Every structure is written in C-alpha cells, then in structure tokens.
Image (cartoon, rainbow, N blue to C red; front, side, top):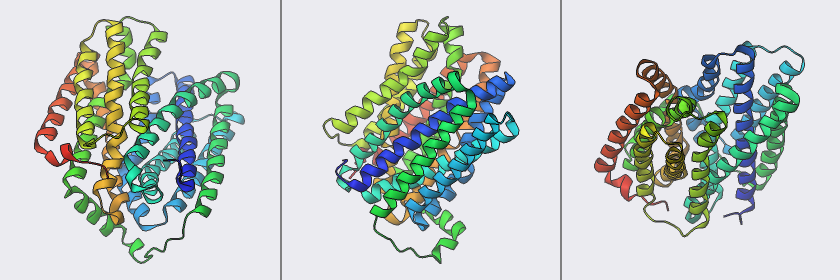
Length: 400
C-alpha cells in the first residue's frame, strides 16, 4: 500500500491533517467551557464545525470533480492555517472572544468538509485500484491513531501553556501540512480539466446527485450514513450522563468508557488493513452498522460498568466496519468523473449530525438519557434492517 511515493506522501499528510482536527476539537471545547461554563455553548462548537458538511459538502464535491484535487488540498491548508493563526494570536494577545472562535471553527469545518470529498477521490487517483479496500482501512486506522495521540498532546499543551500554545501548535501543523502537500503536488502528473465545465456548478451538482442516487450501492451508503449520523452517533454527547446517572462512576471511568469505542475502531481498522483480504465489503458495512445500533440499545439498558465497557468496545468495532468501508464503497461504485460529487453527497448526509444532536438532547431532557439513547437506537436499527433487506446490491457489494 505504501509502495507508491505519491500515496505515501498523501497518507502522511492525512495523519497531519487528522491530528490538527483533533487538536482543534479538544482545544476549542476546553476554551469555550472555560470562558462561559455553558455546556450549550460548548455544544455549539460542534454545531459550527459540522454545519459546513450539511450546507457545503455537495458543493465541495462538485469542485473536487472540476478542479485539480491537490490544489484544493493546498487551498484547504492555507485557509486552515490562517484560521489557526487568528485563533492563536487572539489568545496570545489576551483578546479571547466567542465572536472570533465560532467563525474560525466554521472556517476549519469548511476545510474538513472539502477534505472529505477531495482526499478520498485523490487517494483513488494515485493508488493502485486493487488496493483500495485496504488503503481506505489504513486511512481509518490513521484517523484513530491521530485521535488518540493528538487529544492527549492537546491536553498537555492546554495544561502547560493554555489555548494560545495549543492553537499555535495547530497553526504549526497546518503549516507543515501545507509544505507537505506542496511537495506532493510536484510528484503528481499534470491533468488538464475543462475549465468551461467548471463554471456550471449548479447543473453539475444536480446531475451528480441524480446520477449517484441511481446507483443502488451509493444510495444505500447514503441512507445508512444518514441513519448512523442522526440516530446512532449522537449518543456520544450523552456519555457523561450514561456514566454518571446510569452507571454511577466518576470522571476517570467516564473517560475510559468514552475511549473504548476508539480502541475497538482501531483494532478493526488494523485487521482490515493488514489481515487477509475480505470479500463482500458491503455486507461488512451494513452488518457493522446494524450491529452498532443493536449494541447501543444494550449500552443504554446496561446497569453494570464492566458490561457497558465491553459493549462500547464491540460498538467501536462495528462502527469501524461502517467508517472503513463508507468512502471505499462509494468510490468503487461510481464512475471516475463523478466520484467527488458522490462523496459530497455522503458529506451532506454526515452534515445532518446536528439534527440528531438536537433530537437526542430534547428527548433526553423530556424522558432521560437512557430512554433517549435506547429509543433512537431502536429507530436506527429498524431503518438499517430495512436497508439490509431491500438493498441486496449493497449487501453483495465488493470493493474492486
């Protein structure tokens, strides 16, 4: 997988970018809580970060199909570097303000939305197609590894130097990533693109959505992604309530519980990357998604910490099957000229996450965290079972 110099450099740039993403998430959450003491305002950091996926995800997919993808990655790093420098200077100069923090988080969220479509399509462009499944699993493993190391280091920087130092490190990561992508560009062949077609954005967006949704595999991945991001993944914002109200454990064990799914995700990503090549990746994708929903019901109902910890680990494995195959299935099923637009469609589905956050928050306030998590997981499980039954193309899909 890493034999290709172009992909090897792209892979390393991804590790840098994923690390920067988690440094920002940890730093912004901590500083907003420190400034306001409001969990609601902390939650808004996630809202502004994910919002670009919803409103701009498909547009970024169109642009990635119309323009040179490595140039888009360069643009992402330039914009992200400038946003990180603004944040770093704001806190180093003692002018902390949410009026600055939230817009910069939105800018960084735009970078993440554009990167989702562009990077995956560029991977497919530079890597041997026969290695696509293992390569995307390696990307998933890299995300998990970056999350573990970057969150720990961000916490260390916050403890010794505050937000100014942490945001300064964030700017350094984006700057290094910019240099790394610039070196990658010199390794890639020059591709000519139709600049006239590049201007027909809305027509291209509509045709990309229509053509992508006509493909059963892409349609299935799109629906599953909506279900997972609206009904399953939002439980993570209630993990403190699960630990405190249901399991009666303190903050340390809450952290252990919260991180267990990440360990499960890393384990399954490592197996998919380096283990024997699996067949029928579509079955693994929908099976993992359905398993995650079923396990989440068990997590909501479990009164025993050890059992909940084991469920979280298994849930991470199932969620890892979902995330490792999500982009690869779309890339494999879509014609080359519209792959980024298809990924933009998936980015829009991911962007619906704030709806799930609002929904689970409202149900939790009315009926409690246990009922909220179990109810949404049951709805998600029902929807996923229907997809499994009525979309045989997704079940039988292979990444080739």
